[in-house]
Amino acid sequence: MIRFTAKLGIYFMLLDNTKNGFTLKSNFELRKAYLLFKIISNKTLTNIGKTALEISLKLRLPILFIVKGTVFEQFCSGETLVESFDTVKKLHNKNVKSYLHYSVEGLENENSYDLSLNEVLDSINFVSEKKILDFTVFKPTAIASNVILEKRSKGESLNDNEKKLYKRAYERFNKICELAHKKDVKILVDAEESWIQDAIDEIVLDMMIKFNKDKAIVFNTSQMYRHDRLGYLKNLHKVAKENNFHLGIKLVRGAYIERENKRAKKNNYLSPICKSKELTDDNFNKGASFILSNLDLFSLFSGTHNEESIYKIIEIMKSKGINKDNSCIWFGQLYGMSDNITFNLASEGFNVIKYLPYGPIKEVIPYLIRRAEENTSVKGQTSRELELIKKELKRRDSI
Ligand SMILES: Cc1cc2nc3c(=O)[nH]c(=O)nc-3n(C[C@H](O)[C@H](O)[C@H](O)COP(=O)(O)OP(=O)(O)OC[C@H]3O[C@@H](n4cnc5c(N)ncnc54)[C@H](O)[C@@H]3O)c2cc1C
Image (tube, rainbow, N blue to C red; front, side, top):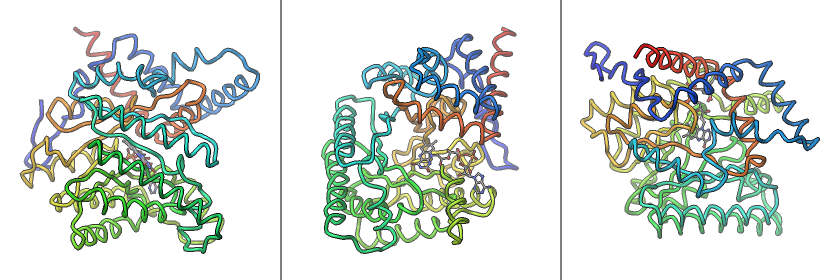
């Protein structure tokens, strides 16, 4: 199935196998997914859909069943942890692991942060009870105030009340990482906007020093669309070497490019984002290469749908003689996207994991809107999805 081309030095065509890629999808589901991506690929239709949804929700019109049968089904694994576990088992049968995320965005207050903390702690306990799960995840702004994280990132001094709030936020990080360590569950900390990220990096570094002594349990996320992140990774490596702990890194390109550039322009500072997509791609690949060259200390969770980067990582692994199932290397994709990557890598024996968002339909709508908007803006990704579904339907029709 895999062709190895000496000239290119890469596995070629691995990710094009649509029979593997859509192994879990019936013809009906594939046709539905095709229609959905077709609508999403059209910016005007996506905007109309978004506005119609918002108005219908305000007017309390019964439209949730439409959401359920369309975007929810495509991008979410269920309304509850238990409901999602059916999907987890289906994926596991195909050698694909899962990590579940309660994708409900709470209010920005201490009460809501405490509720989110409990949800993350519950998810760690859930994962530790289920033998087929390894990771869980949380978003820092679900447990800590944006305002405090921003002030801390800027190095501004905090007043007494803010110091108290920062301490409470720090303790929430600590409770999560402590339980993850105790239960041997790997924990991914999502990356956020650059103006609050320094404070997050600082706390997560403390957590890695404390809980990653024997292996990577705590994973920070590095957004490689930021031009300073290769330096960040190199510095982390130095600190880990000097202080004898392991580094877990979720490597991504980054999700907030528009907000980042807009804010930099408005406030007249140099944008932290690479000047072009090519520079981001290069930065991502260099980051992956640096990590793979230092696997004695690093674990890599590669969160990308970019096929070139995946081929690159496979190529580096091959050239360094790293086993496909090395326990320090994971490939992650979002549920409902890039199944060709997920199932083809898994069938070849690589460690693959799907990000499974779940929650009550009404509550996960902001996540679903973001997914639809992202797919509208990531033109290449949507047309790739459409191309692959079309190819698979044709293959099935010809049998
Ligand atoms: C499992 C997983 C976990 C994730 N976790 C996080 C997270 O914690 N935090 C987070 O921010 N994101 C996260 N993401 C999203 C991720 O950062 C990307 O937005 C998304 O995956 C698309 O990038 P790509 O590498 O898949 O592929 P591609 O489609 O090749 O890349 C698109 C990305 O390239 C960058 N880009 C596009 N145009 C330009 C340009 N003109 N100049 C510079 N850069 C450009 C942007 O980052 C854009 O999102 C996660 C993604 C996955 C799959």
